[in-house]
Image (tube, rainbow, N blue to C red; front, side, top):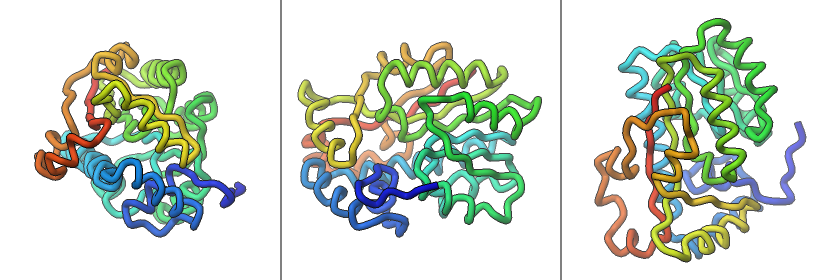
Length: 251
C-alpha cells in the first residue's frame, strides 16, 4: 500500500483534530485551514468519536457478537474493539495509513481484522465479510462519520447492499450532517475542499429515504445522544452551518 503524503486525507485530518499522531504536516495544515472556516470542527469530531463509544457500549450490553465497521479510522483507545473485545469485528478504511496501523493494533486479536476497502465498490468488502462472518450474518453495522462524504447514489447503493448482506436482527448505527442554513452546503464544501472531499449534508427525512430498506429506530443530535447539550456554547451552535445527528436503524 502506498501512502501519499503530498495531499491531505480527511481520515488523517480527523485523527489530528482528535489529538492523534498518525498524520502528516499536509494534514495538519489542512486542519488549521478548515478550523478557520469551521472553528467548531474539533468539537464535532469529538462528539462523533464519543458516539462510536456509546454505540460500542450499547452493542456490548445487547450481546452483539459480529461487527462490520465502515470507514473505521484508527481502532485506538475508545474504538469498538475496546467495548467489544470478544466480538468478531471487521474494520475497514480506504486510507492505507489507517489500515497499516490498524493491522498493527489488532495483531494479537485473532477475532478482529482490518481490511482496505473503497465503499464505492462493495464487492471486495462483501466477499471478505462473507468469509470473515461465515453463515452468521446477524451483524452490527457501523457507518459513523462516512455518508456525508458520499453522494446519494453511492450511499444508497452501499446501504442497500449491506442490508442484503445482513440477516434479520441486524442493526445499523450512522451519523450525518444536517444543514442549518441555505448556505450550509457551500460553507461545508469550502471547508471540505481543503481536505480534498465534497460534503453532502442531508435532512433526517432525506437520510431516512436514502437508507431504505433499513428502518429508523431512533434519530437525534449527537449532543442529545450523549447528554451533552451544553458541549457547544449557544454562540458556537448558532454560528455552525450544520448540526450532526446520530441514527440507529434495524434490519
